[in-house]
Amino acid sequence: MINSVHLMASKWLLLGLSGVVVCAFCTGGCLESSRFGSNSDTQLSQAELEFQEGRDRPPTAKTLFAMAEILSTQGKDSECEFILKKIIREHPNFLPSYNSLAALQMRQGRVNEAINSISKALQIRPRDPVLLNNLGMCWIVRRDYEKALEFFTEAAGIIPENAKYRANMGVALGLMGRYDESLSLLKLVMPEDIAEHNLAVLRKASESL
Image (cartoon, rainbow, N blue to C red; front, side):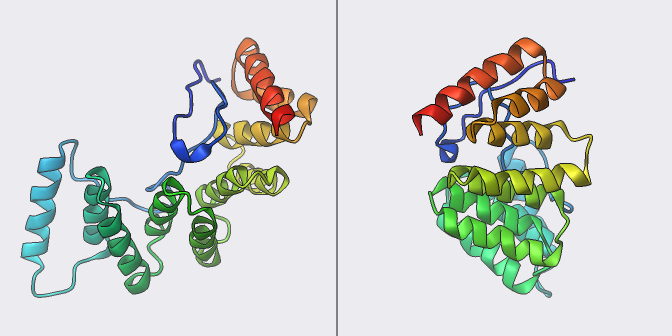
């Protein structure tokens, strides 16, 4: 049971659904992710050291991905995108790079490109629940809630115990006007009063579309 619900503040969501549980892109949830520490200066120093130690051979996908994460936190989107595309080109099976690239594209309002990035990753791993959920989020932004529901449902079918996938199903159903089904799902993953509040927000959002 989820004890609290947080406002999704991501600018790319474009919905204004206060308090609704919606899953954001997870850049490290598909495969391994590389994290060097909590301090960006320490991250940069260690990443540079790894580059120096491996200067006689090409950098690994993990090393490149770590550098892309650093560039992202520094707001250097162009450089970050260049490195992520380099990873995809040279290490096509490293799935976190697709998620990170899609997240960057979504932040910039390039929804079709984000859909394409996630779809390419799903060609490599078709039943990856993180990728499926993230693709559902793309279709939420496109306001194709029926298609979004298909991907959220598939993700939830793979990991039934994942509350955020079921919550996202509830969000899609609410935005489609299927309020009873939406409330039933939301009540499974959050307290009843919060579920009812979220449904009211979803109802208002769906009626204003």
